[in-house]
Each structure stands twice: as structure tokens, then as C-alpha cells.
Length: 237
Image (cartoon, rainbow, N blue to C red; front, side, top):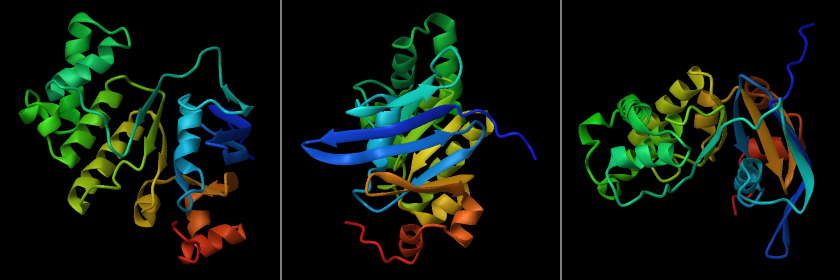
């Protein structure tokens, strides 16, 4: 039997309380290297809060988050509605690199490369805030990709996009993963989850109800809550 790889990230008994409401309730999971993880669950289950807590944006009330090795891996996160700065598309990417200590020609080169990878080189000098929603999301991915992160958290990156724009985002996510970046992503789109996921983390009421390979999850989910979810029997709201 192949030896199980060491976890890149291990969360233990995470509890997050927001506005007096317990959103995550002693949630535990492991993120292994080399996989694309899709986080599923009904609205309000705690998917987005899980990603924000793992990324360090929300401090847990209790519990631990441990990273493998001697250093915290380089991280990036892209949201459903990315924030665009009042500057060109290219300058948005350069700014992200600058605040991470990358200057001079390496910054300019990496920004140009990232813009090209997401297919925005023709509009690189256009103000970012006038771009379409799909173009802005591709730009947000370029901004993250340029950082060469070890792990990329994606929170509903296609939720507000039309099918064509969503397809472009999926293509870019797959390309980022192919270069070795670990992907952890939330979505409500089960077809997208089937296309992108190596494994599924299913969250119910602030806890991980199931973490399993994607093909097994869709063929034979182990938890009752997941079976109901796939049948459309869990409420979205």
C-alpha cells in the first residue's frame, strides 16, 4: 500500500463565531499536496468562512491550523467579486507583486507573463474597473498566479459569470493547478465540481461531514447529508 503523503495543511477543531453565531463548529480537515479540492455544502454551511479561516482572514475562536514544513506556504485567495484598484489591468498585477516584495524587472516580467496566461494582454493597459465581470475575474486570477503560490483559495470564482466566462475561469484554474499550485475552491456548481475536483470536502452545519475522492463522492457519498445534498434535498438557504 502506498504511503499516505504528509498534509500540506492540517486544521483541527476550528471554531469560528461571527456576530454571536457559531459558523464553524470544531471543524477538522487535512489538505494533501497535489490535489484539487472542491468544498461543497448548502448555503450557510460554512464553506466561505472555512476558506477565509484557513487563509488567515478570520481568526478562529479555538482550534489550530498547522502548515507542513519550516515555513508557511505562499498563499493567495480570489473571491467571487474581486476588488480592482483604480489603475490598469497590468498595474493591478504589478501592485500585488510589489506588496509581496517583488520589484524591478522581475515584477514587470511576471506581471506581463501572468496577464498573457489569462488571455488579457490585448487589454493590459485598460482600466481594470471598466473590464467585464469575466475579465475582472481572470485578472484576479492573474494577480494571484503571478505570486506563484503554493496554495490558492478560490471562493465561488464563477458564481456571477455567464457560462462562457465561467469556462474560461475553469480553464485558468486547471492551468494553475497543472503548474503545481494546490487548489482549494468552493462552488455551488456540481458540474464544475465534477470537472475540476480530485477530492470533495462536504461541509454540513460548520463541520466536515465527508472528505473523499471526487469520483467516490459523486458515485456513492458516505454521509446521509451528502446523499440528500446531491439529490437536491438540502435547502440552499
